[in-house]
Image 1 (cartoon, rainbow, N blue to C red):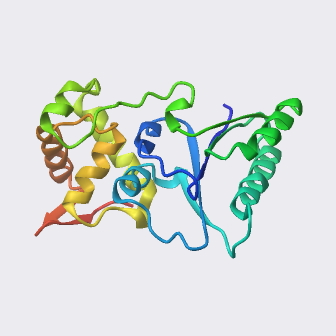
Image 2 (tube, rainbow, N blue to C red; image 1 turned 120 degrees about the vertical axis):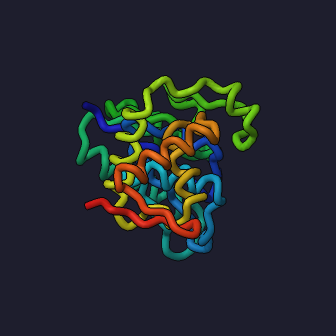
Length: 212
């Protein structure tokens, strides 16, 4: 299976639809500038739900195109380590385009776009999550509860030290795994099932995990 890498130029673009990558075989690398120490909460939750498939890379020092050079370095290294890999650079910087053209000549698949929605096969809802009415209008995840539970447990097991510590955050994380398509009653059911199975213990809004 070919590796798929999404390299986000966070200095240039702060995508709000990262959750749409959930459940797909993507490895995401978020490149931040030396002084970018904060990530918007909505994006952080979506990235957190992707677990070990996400890596943050903060560059050292400043300089014109410093972050761009880091992205170029990683494309080269990853291309050498993963023959046949496909790369998606999320940036509005057209300075990447000559390089991408050269990579294609060398047989390396790479494309640049300003939005994650432009990645082939990725579907991004134009609806804003949060409203019960809006959520019902979205396409619900067809998987039965046992399959959803398996997805959640697998994600939490892989994350280990990065698990949500508060119930509210855990609910948001679980919803992001299913592209924010779950209504509150579904989230309640999943939390209840996780508790029954002894996977989590909830007290005063805080969550403890009983996982390896």
